[in-house]
Image 1 (spheres, rainbow, N blue to C red):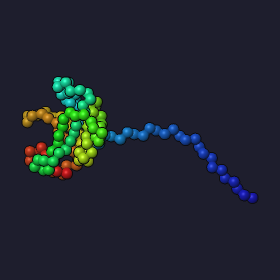
Image 2: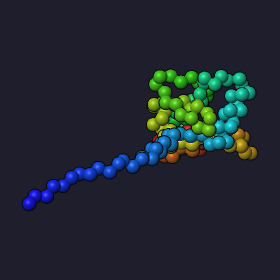
Image 3: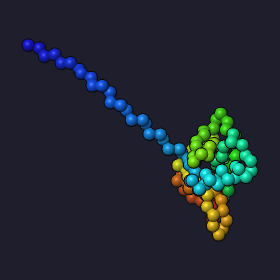
Image 4: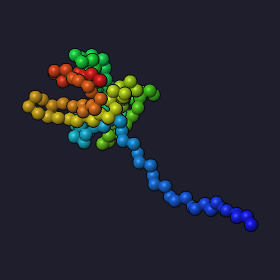
Length: 130
């Protein structure tokens, strides 16, 4: 006597939606509000995103650059608290995992980059090394 086995396929269970990957870089909510405030006060069009860029220079090798700019075909674009972030591929490799905050204190106010890739910074804190 032979045994016949059948592969009975159960209906596919509904799959949960894939979680979206977090942005490789983000603003804090406070920084996003400050960017929106600057955009409004300077009448900058919504077609411009906030460009985050790493450029060579400074005591430690690299500095950050932050300004409003239009996206090019080679850029990546991310949304953070309603602010479009624009970054080029070269800068993205140094900024991955970075959170930009806006801080106010006795020494002034400005945007602070919290970059996990930084190995060292200069004494003044305006340049870094990865």
